[in-house]
Amino acid sequence: MTTYACIELRDLKLQTQIGTYAPGAIIPKQHLLDLTLWIDQKLVLISKDVMENVFDYDPLIIEINKLAGDGHYETQERLISRITQACIKYPEIKSLEIGLRKLPVHAGSGSLGIRLSLDEIALSKLRISGELPH
Image 1 (cartoon, rainbow, N blue to C red):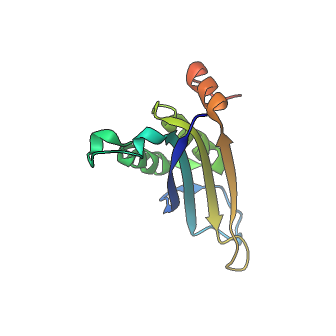
Image 2: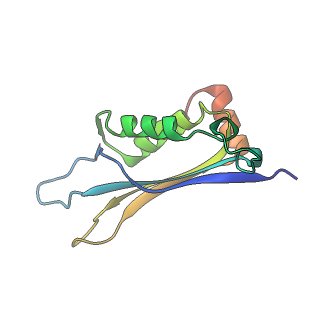
C-alpha cells in the first residue's frame, strides 16, 4: 500500500482579473484559491528538521501568484489550467486538487467556483504529454 501525505493551501487571495461583466453586473471582489498537493509521506515524516527533507512549496506559491497577475483571464478554468501546468513541473506532487472561487456572487453574498482533481494516473498523463486537452 502506498501512503501519501498532503500539503494544503486554503483561501489564498489572488490578485487577478477574471471575467468580463456587463454594466450593472456584480463584479467579484475576491478570488480565493484552495490547493491540495498529495506528496510522498517521506517528505512529511522526517527524522531531521531540515528543508532538504521536505517539499519546498514556496517557489510554487510564487509562481501561482505570478500566473494570477499575468493579465486578464476570461475564465477561472484557464487560470486553474495554468496552475495545474505549474504543478506538474514538480515530480514530488503525486496528485492534486485545485479549487478557485469568486465572491460575492449575488447581493453581497455567496461564492461560485470550480474544482479540479487529478489522481496519480491523470497527472502522469499530463506530464508525459505536456499538453492540456483541447
